[in-house]
Length: 264
Image (cartoon, helix red, strand yellow):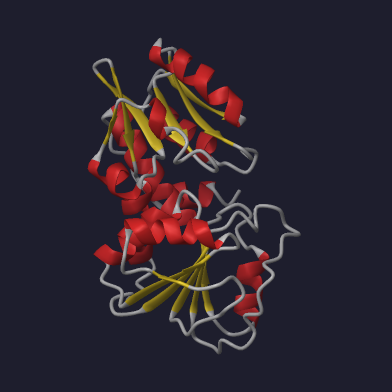
């Protein structure tokens, strides 16, 4: 039996096992997908075990998308550009780092039928997924990308990767068409963003990369103010779909049953 994992910290919120095991069963694959909570000090030993091929593939979530890079033999183009890895697979004896968040976000946005071209996008946060969002937004031809992070230096590091990005201080609210919460605030139901977004007006697009819980306080408040809201569920499904295809060479369906599965 083949073994697959998602690693992160926190990891309790992850629905990756639910989705991957659903597809594994659908396609009669002899495999299991589990989740594993790691600390920084666990990474080295984890990759020693990975080299022994006791694990056949790995998904990476918060906060290790950059931290895993030194342990890999090669990065794909998407991971090289974004310096972020969310999917690990073997190519002969080489451990390859790939990034399916880029196309996952892009396909997710297209699924909402939101015309993002020439829009101004404001991103909250500067963690591992943000470089993927920026890369996707560039491909989608947005007019402006603004980012803000509590630790400004982290946002400025992203600016070194993507020089067209504008960095503003945390608490400053620029004019935008779409705002993305890419922080981890929202994973707990009581989490609140310490930002006053009450004066941004209506008919903006509020997007949260978090998919569990399906409505964060960030989205709840936005909806109350008369804005369009979406969570990261479709991005999650599309990125998982590509990981699954890489590992199993199978192209599972993304249908209403798949989408409904994550709401149960």
